[in-house]
Length: 128
Image (cartoon, rainbow, N blue to C red; front, side, top):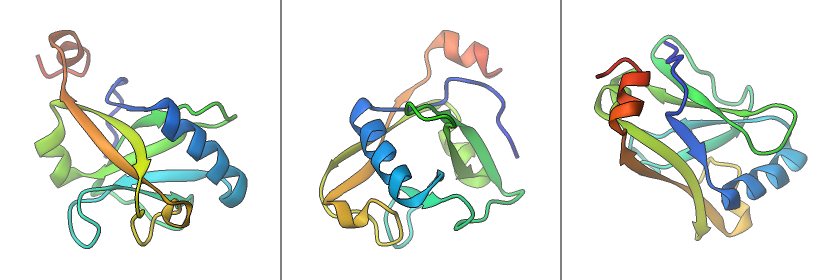
């Protein structure tokens, strides 16, 4: 499933800087918003091809971090039903990263900050 609406996901400047470094080390990256099992509800960052998405996943959008290609962000369709009225920003803070996410060894961890979509954003994504 693909959500073609723009403006659902963004990245903080600090997360963008870390993503540029991680891309230099690992190649192209992607995110999948974890649904809350082993690593809580964290945005998990993987080299493209290491995590396979399928028809049960929603492409929320692509975050631009100053590279040639953006980084795609996915979430499961069932989780998207709960989060479809929110805007997500991927940020980074000091701490232990998730076990399977590429930032793990850096001493930093990605997290998702959320806010409700504005009336204008709701209209833009067809939810008004």
